[in-house]
Length: 420
Image (cartoon, rainbow, N blue to C red):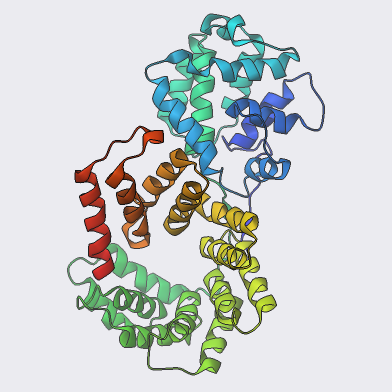
């Protein structure tokens, strides 16, 4: 099963950064091939960026880099107190639209609102009719346009394209669905209350693969008895895997690979991992990469890269670790960055550590704080440790004073998790 990524810069139905950039291009007098990169730099008020990176962001096959989102997060915060904060960006955009250098001193909000090309850009963006955009947002933009306030309209549209629009998105073919079993399973999920677990067990006894897979997941997390039971987890997943459940097939292989169960048969592990791959499990590709890492590096990297093609964060992490171990720090950082852009907590913490080593303390603090705000089940607790170190002594470059209270708070969270 392959994810079919959807292009988000083809002018069809997406209020995406790619479509916003294309609309600005359309109204520009410049027809040079590098205009897309120039518009991107103008919108973010930066000097340069790799062309391939721009292409991936604007097509929508990758999430917009977290450092570029940070630019707009900072702007959004400043914008509350200073409406003119976007004038440099408008100077960049109008310079491209009119093919002449526009200085910030030449502009104010009134002049921008009178610019006919800015008006056309706003109207064209609004005509994208993205069904994911709320009616309240559309009404807000229309109110700006009705009052000839194109400055604030375009700012809000940029906020949406950079910060709110979800990418990448894809069509995915679902295979091996047993409609009757799925229907019975969904009934329990939709209608059962306090008897949910018992109802799942009754359904599992009828060999319902979805109920068995769900019970396997609950046992893996310790949410049935209060204690993790990998053997029961394995039993439930095996019943589901034998009926062709993709995740269950992967979990059988993963439990054996991770030495969490009594079963140690490598042939069984490989059988179910390969079966999971055939059923479309990206996680299984990544696990096969881990298995072959100390056996055949070429095969291992092939699996990691295959999983990475689907935007699988853990595959990016594994590739990063591989290249870091082999002293290719630039390539390793690139892979960690790809994972961090997907808000993988481990990678966010790793990027923070890299920034510390590079002397970039501002970005390091940003990454560490992002890491501790990921879902609790996925959170890298070393980010708490790294934050604790910052507050233990303070940091003059960040204008952060020594803070014993925050140091103790973050260190206690780290220590408690480490001991649990």
